[in-house]
Length: 162
Image 1 (cartoon, rainbow, N blue to C red):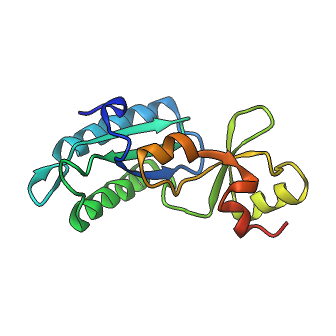
Image 2 (cartoon, helix red, strand yellow):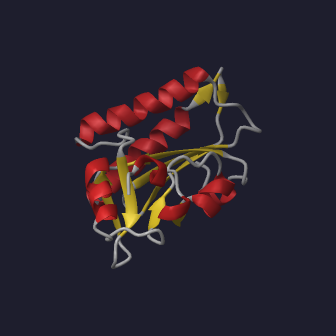
């Protein structure tokens, strides 16, 4: 399997966010399943150069070097099926796009649903300077520069009435 550091900066990235912090056992289980999935992941018969990483115990990152082989519709469908399978097996949410992750006042990563997040903004717990996580990054370069950004510069701000 390819490591994150071996992936080029223009590698395509998908970010899946868990609704809660994963346990150590869950992380180990997911990593084992991901390694097996990536070993077999192909697009039109071509093996994909890909890697998988769990960050902060909350984010599942899947990267593909599309210079080697493009991730096709079918291969993307396979990856989504893999994520949905993880959700079912572990009883976790990875595809709910209305969960927002942010760094709380102790610096830890917290997750809130849209209503709770909006309440935290309205009460001043989350301010314009609060770090939020941009799960819409498209490639490794964006992941490294725009994954953790201030709330005031994020897409989250457009969804929340302040």
